Amino acid sequence: MQDEIEGVAVRCFDAIVVGAGLAGVCAVYRLRQAGVSVRALEAGGGVGGTWYHNRYPGARCDIESLDYSYSFSDELQQEWKWSERYAGQPEILRYINHVADRFDLRRDIQLNTWVVRARFDEAQERWMLFTDTGEVFSAKYAIMATGVLSVAQVPSMKGLEDYRGEWFHTGDWPEQGVDLAGKWVGVIGTGSSATQLIPIVAEQTEHLYVFQRTANYTMPAQNHPMKPEVEQEWKKHYPDRRKFAWASGFGHNQVTNHMSGKEMSAEARLAELENRWRLGGLYMMRAFKDILTDPEVNEIAAEFVREKIRATVQDRQTAEALCPRDLYIGTKRLCSGTNYYETFNRRNVTLVDVKNRAIERITADGILLEDGSEYEVDALIFATGFDAMTGAMNRINPVGRKGRALREAWAAGPQTYLGLCVAGFPNMFVITGPGSPSVFSNMVTSIEQHIEWTVACIEHMRAHGLSSIEPTVQAQEDWTRHVTEAAGKTLYAQSRNSWFHGANIPGKPVVFMPYVGGVGNYYQTITRVAQSGYEGFRFSSAPAVRNASHAGET
Ligand code: N01
Image 1 (cartoon, rainbow, N blue to C red):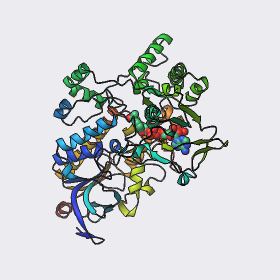
Image 2 (spheres, protein in one colour):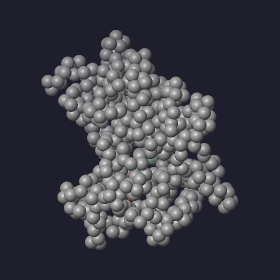
Image 3 (spheres, helix red, strand yellow):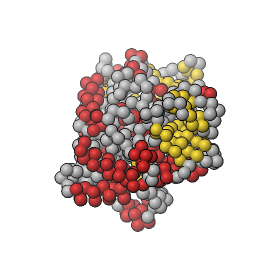
Image 4 (tube, protein in one colour):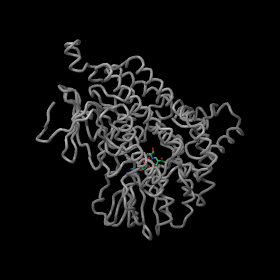
């Protein structure tokens, strides 16, 4: 093995984990338990990933706290007390920091270190990773815990460089906070981040303009302080709760109605929808078993939400503008907020339609629309989303076998086997990558399933003297086709204008990226693959073993 590369001493570990968000922290814990030497490299100044960077006012989880937490330690899940039904960003960040301290993980986590490139050394069968700090790391395994919504997307808008005010992106919010008191502020976007931020910012600003291109459906989160009896019940039955989540469709404990919307009477349907509205947040997505497959059933739920909007927003024109049209409910990620629609009844909030009158440019003082109207603002907030699922991986652009870079391999859209591994990129594990349930699930469940699988795979390789693993091209093609076919059975296939498809990034191939076959089914599949001796993968033997008994084998 080379001691130096490009004049820099190489630091060697069994595994390098890229990222120290929820996935990276879990990976460090599990790998260390398995006796694998590990170093996590994290670009941010602290652990937490998404929850470190998304500090915008109102940032909050839309999966219940008791579900959105690690299951790997019973002591941890029994001890930790969540203060609210849905934890806010500061509390989740405290939790991740607590986990890092409680399990003494920090000594294996290096902060303020950006992995800028990576390449697989075929001769050594090791990954070389290069950082912005000028360091070089060598590892047998590259565990890419880079996050699926970690590359903030500021749309290229003419004139932004001339803007005299301050501007921010929700996904890269300043640690010290932003003082918006008494200011005229513009928010561009009305997705999940915006719908959480708008009600809070509206209370601080002199005036708030909300620039909306596509109205989305926002459910009331129905957040409240944690009820002691709920917490006690969960903690008493935590193993069963976790088991249920891991086998469920979406990786959590939300109850699904297994009836078709068409099998129910109009009264029963309405009662179900009212109940889902009361339960809040993402519960609406489980109102009927066919809400995401039958356009008519979907429309019943969509119209129910539109009626709620009309009943809440006093100005008729604003209410109608907030009602999503030509958009199946749930096919752009459902939003979950508190007082979102109510906020448009405030005198200091104006909804500005930028669908029919697009943003022409940013001026020195604000935003100019193509019809010539200008909105002057002291500060601009981009709640404009992320280069999702592939952005962070493509930025590192790992180079695999035969010098082939990931961007080239994924030029027509991401290809993976099981959403975990990529042909031609041996020993690289993509945590919650494209082709896995990922953003279609409780992320913590999906993260734990992937880390468990990855660590078991590494243990298998060690036990059998194997040096590298990678999927066959055939297995990868079959899996990618299966992912597309699964989406094809749903309304997602007909709603391509979302970040699920990469449609929010100019030039990105429009391909549905997550796997919608269900978390439980998916977990069974990856478990079966492992138990079958890793069907669809090929291994090479460790040099010592190869020399002794498998000469010439790869
Ligand atoms: O981003 P988004 P987000 N001109 O991509 C608009 C997770 N999350 O940060 O729809 C004008 O959803 C864009 O308009 P359009 C969650 O998975 C979770 O809000 O493209 N507008 C859209 O309205 C979520 O889905 C939580 O027409 C422009 C908005 O910007 C994901 O992160 C909280 C524009 C972007 O919405 C991303 O959410 C927050 C332009 N040029 C986030 N470009 C919870 O757990 C973009 N837009 C609750």
